[in-house]
Structures are given as C-alpha cells and as structure tokens.
Amino acid sequence: MLNDLARQTRTMLFLQLLGPAIAIGSFFGIAGEHWGVVLTLFCLGLLVTVGWGVGVVVWARRVDRAFKAVLVRASEELVTGRVTGVPAVGMVARRRRARRQPSYLASTPSAIAAPAVVLVVTALAEDAPRRVGVLVPATVGLESRNAPVAVLLHPDEREAAVVDDRVTPEQVSAIAADPRWESAALPTDRTVGGGYLPMLGCALLGLVAGLGLDLLVVALAT
Image 1 (spheres, rainbow, N blue to C red):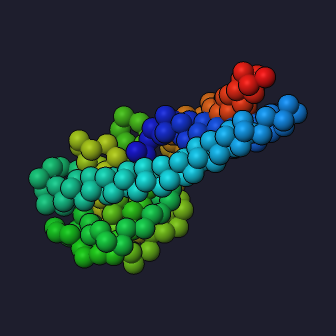
Image 2: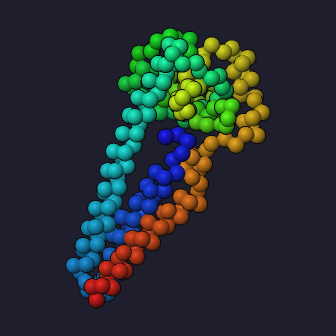
Image 3: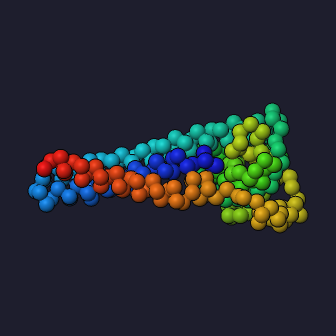
C-alpha cells in the first residue's frame, strides 16, 4: 500500500490515456466520412474515460478503508502489549484524514477517541528505510512535512506503527539530526511508484494503444 505502488500506478496511467486517445483518434474516420465509426469510437473513448474515473475512486476508497482497518488492528496490538514494537526513528512524509478512526500513542494503553489523522512516516528500520502509517490524534501537531518522530514498528505488519510520544525533546532533536537522512536510500513517491520512466512509458503505451485501435477500426471500415 505504501511501499510498492508500481503496478497500480502504471495501470492507472495506461487507462488514463487510453480513453482520451480512443476519443481523439476516432476523428481519423472523418476523411472517409465514416461517421458511424467516428461516433462509436468517440463514445467508446468516453466510456473508457468515465470507467477509469469511477474505478479509481472506488479502488482508492476500498484500499483506504482496508489500510485503516489494518492500522487500527496493528495499533491495538502494539499499545496493549500483545506484540512488541520495534523502536525506530522517522520523518513525516504526508498526512491523510481519518475522522472516524481512533488514534493511538505508545503512552496510552488503549484507543483514543476519533477524530484521528493518518501520518505516512518514513521510518529508518533496521533492514531498510520504509514508509509506515500511524494513527494519531488530529490535534497532536505533527502535520508538518519532515517533522521528526519516534515510532514503534509492528513486527508483522510492515506498514503499520504507532508514534512513541514518550521521547524527550532532546531525542526528537537527535532524530532530526540523524545523518542517515542524508545517506540512506529513502523511499519517495518516484520509487514506490516504480520510477518515472516506466510510468511515462505506460502512459505513452495507453496513448499508442488508443490511437492504434482507432486506426485499425477505421482501416477495417474502408
């Protein structure tokens, strides 16, 4: 969900360009006055585009709900002591809304009532840096990008953690000054998405596929 979005991103970009390409390429049939073909292909392009938009919204909401459910379960296990968290240092990468979800802090042995926010945190784990999600109170004040935080990583759910609010201000300052932030290979939007060149290639493939389909249909109609 947070560390490997290559397949989803490439599929989304392919379909995002496929629909408009079919709609625009339908006008190849105007030269031969194949108006029925033009209208059919144009409607097909619109249908693919609308389907892509609806699919992205539905998929994003389902994934978001499933991910928050995992965070709730994993956080409960961490704060109640059912599993032992692995200490790590982190930096806030982004913030997401979670108004209906409870929140969790290492110092509180039970859930904190909603509203909460999901912070996506880049954690310097022992094996390799990775992104994890934490549910924190909406008023905790960690919304700033690159805010240093201490976290307890779930030993089994690799993308779940809780914020360790028991650290001192001096320890927080030490997290911000950790030299690994400059030397480690940190996950970024580019890396979790599979790289910009493959993303661009999938977008161009969608464009070429759409235009190629139009040319084929127009050629068969003549």
